[in-house]
Amino acid sequence: MLNTTVSELKKFSKQELLEHIEKIQALNDKPLCLEANCITRHELEVHQIELEMQNRELREAQQQLEETRDCYADLYDFAPVNYISLDEDGIIKNINLTGASMLGEVRSNIVERPFSKWICKYDLEVFTNHLNEALKSNKKLTAEVSMKNGSGDILEVMIESIGSQDLGTNKLVCRSVIFDVTEYNRKKNELFLQARQLKLITDSLPVLIAYLDAGEKHLFANKTYVDSFDLLPNDIIDKTAEEIWGHNNYKIGSNYLKLSLAGQMVKFDMELPIGDERTKYFHTTLIPDYDNDSIVYGVIVLIGDVTDRLAIEAIDRKRLLDIAHFSRLSAMGEMASEIAHELNQPLAAISIYSDACRRMVLSGKSESEDIIQSLTDISVQADRAGAVIRRIREFVSKKDIQRNDTSINELVQGALQLLAVEIRSHNVELILDFTEDLPVVFVDQILIEQVIFNLIRNALEAMDDIEQHRRVLRIHTLVSQSNVIEVLIDDSGPGMTEEQLKKIFDPFQTTKSDGMGMGLAISFSIIEAHHGRLWCVPNNHSGTTFSFTLPTN
Image (cartoon, rainbow, N blue to C red; front, side, top):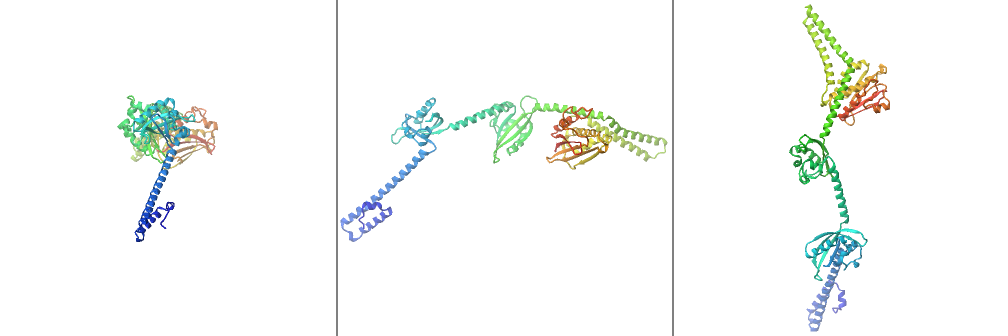
């Protein structure tokens, strides 16, 4: 049972071998086996079993080593990195499959050949210096060279090398990793060109352009921005907005900066202490730079010098005021007879009441109450005449634009008071449809009243040629869906042709035989200056509806 051959022992597992040894040792302890030859045989068998166990362990270790070697060989060959080993003469001693693929050759055709065969001639010196320095140093060194692969393609590569000693030959070798940076360099060059082109564009613009990071530090500034502050580019980069703008101006812009860094685009005006001694005004726009997750990385700053523009606007505004003033004077001149009639009534009443008062005093028989009543009537009529003169004086006054919060309904009523006599003389039925509690508008009262005055007066004159019973003037005020105040002045006149409607707001275009064609052009400019819109359309009453809008305050 225990006489087991070597071939049989090899078939045993490790556990079976251990159990077999225990059985032999148990027999050695029995009295039956005291004979020397029996004991020796059993000891030899135990020794044989132990040797077999050692052999088995060695075979298992060797197998594990081979598997590990194969594993590392696969990692070396199929790693997505180009590995190569060179001797002191630059001869390729080893290269992985990825590296061979990069060179465009099979590995057997590469090993033991000089690596310089694939280096472009103009970079041979760079490679040679790199190899020599790497062999002398135990630190990683880097160089960039151009190579030509087996297909003739030029590759731009970065070589990272370190010198070491080959354990087998004790000779110095250079172990290198090669990275193909062709595409990376192409994109880098493209980005560089784009950045250069962007800088050329931004530097040529008359607008001050800068980029502030989340900490309000300057990361970019165009030439106009740099020159405006009389600084060098390096004096601006990494400086905060407060350091460049100055403390007082930063106090104006800091709240806007915070809003922009919170993701909101903002616009504001400020003065900056730059350039010559005269005051300069700047319009600033802050645009937040954020991604889809609403993380704000910084702010794009656009600052435009609007000093000259404001000066031109002031000239245009004065010209508009002069023309509008002339228009009002012309309108009052045309209405002279109506104005005289409007003033004649209270003046005649004053004359009558004062004459009656004089007679009562001369007669000596009048009661004091009658005299007081006559004097009161005289005062009322004087106030009435004074109100007419005051309204006319205000309407024709010449002054700069002064905007105030105003009720549009009150402005319409003011224009109607000026035109009260003319409305009666034209025998027009007036229908008012005012929306109550409208939001106020921030406007120049005289100019907007002039627009309403012009539109109502045009509507009255447009209805002169139709029957009196058909003359209806409707005025409607409302808040539109876009949250702006809208005024509609609707007449029942003969209307206008499509061609007339297209040109009605052009200067010197008129449907009147004696008109100058400036009233509507002036009205259009006034509404436009108030950021509103003026237009006209045919209505359902065979006439025309003029409408204008004004933004609410």
